[in-house]
Image (cartoon, rainbow, N blue to C red; front, side, top):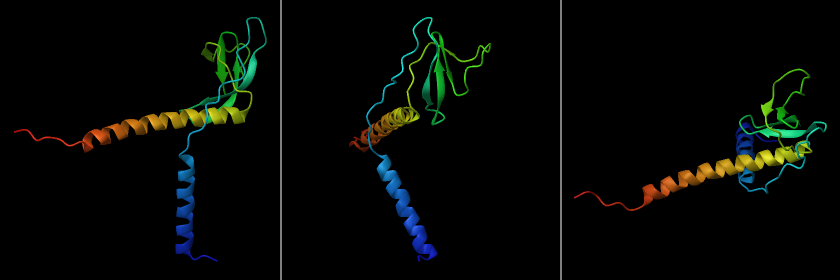
Length: 126
């Protein structure tokens, strides 16, 4: 049995381990359901939203796509353009993770470049 101090230290170590494991690169996962050809039934699958860090069922028609709630007949919502989708929620989650890690790596690289620039020896004006 751990006391409160030991439990807190253990919880901190678990958190550090989760963060360390998160710093890895995963392979890109491409959509595997193409949009429907003209005159065919809608394609149903999954898609992701980076800003919301979420995966939802999605529908693609020949001219538009819908994220989240199913397409409602007679409702003009959705976004323009057909869109390829993912066949499983797992594939969409893997694609979301890859996209987020690429964005984070890009941001970190830009910060590292600024740090490197600031760390370079400078000459003082005379």
